[in-house]
Length: 544
Image 1 (tube, one colour):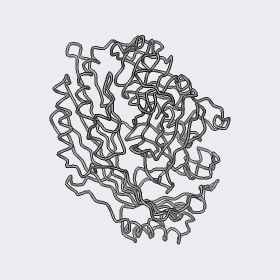
Image 2 (cartoon, rainbow, N blue to C red):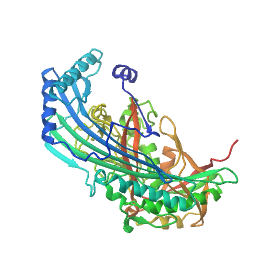
Image 3 (spheres, rainbow, N blue to C red):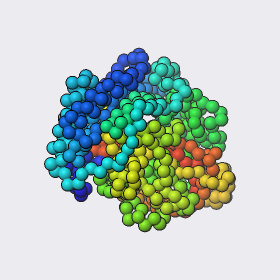
Image 4 (cartoon, helix red, strand yellow):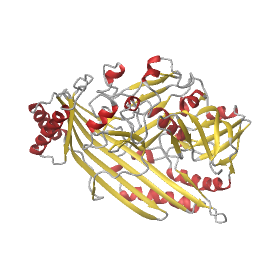
């Protein structure tokens, strides 16, 4: 099937990028609603209704997703609470194969008659779609797992922490920022609990309980004499963890020119140093454009990995099925087939991994009931694989899916989404401080900022939060107005050093957008601090 035909027949215009807006999913529920889960036996009973109804109408394959999605959004500004919202979304999505074509229908009416009618509707849609079919769906085989379960290994359920405790933390963040040099400060906390039940005609009944958390803030300071301002965002990373992430430990702090964090986050401390640094940013020297050796901290590098590696290795983009929202991919099949496309330097090893503990994308099974995995995308600098799901696997010669299918909720069709994509740490002993000592003219960058990348994920520009000038092996002061430009292949081939596993940390996106109608997913990207030689740096304040 040609791409144009695919888009016309399915109505699934697909796209990608980081959503700037916060999606509110579900209906509002009272803040004091107790946290609970639904009995898996009840979900199995309802799933069997759908499976039996679909089979009786002629489906050759059926999968059922019963989802209960809980979200909590807490937002404050200065000494005030701006908003607190709890939402809940509960329903069932039924996907079938009939006459070689997909059909999908969903409902939030969770009685057996409604579910049976919804399954029949999905089959009817598949059969109507099949009237226009040119190539039947080819689904990679998947064994049934029987009745299994998986939970995010949390220590403290954030939904069971009193709202007051979370609000008090955010107001404490604002307080220390205002007592510093901040003029304005906003702080936020987002919580997600996905209670997902998957059943299929392959024989799987999978119950999963997924938790994610994202604390963040933005501090603003204004120069009253010029009217110019600077901001400093939190150096936190959204994580697939419980509220234990908000309980700081000294062992998870990396002390340096700025304090950075591993698996626990000290939000108050970060706000205190952020308020100091936003004042320093106002007074910082504007960067002189030119070639620099860049030392990129994981709090920054995750976004470059996401945009220049994660998205272009999605197979639907490679094939042109995904073009809406943020383009396709320059990593065409011929480059992969050559087995020698030098994506990066030999130091560059990048993996996709849906199993990594603490990551946003970690689950036991994807939304097609496939056990999650870890696999190479870039090996010793060479492109070796993509990210594929069950109906794509045969295209690249795989006999099974890589387990990276996801839907943002029960009412959306699942499709290929980015796994956690991470740069592996260096094999040799190396710290960021040792790395900086070998740089004559460079810039250390921490935190993510603005970015731009073209429609094939090739030419790009990235900013950041904090920029420090390096001269003759030492950090000599802060810079501002910094952005670097390159193309994906040139940039990754300039990678000259990667710190070892002691420095490895996760960053990530809580609301990565893709598809049309758009869906969001959460994904982490890990790395250690890495050096890239001779990268072009521009001054973003200069005008022609």
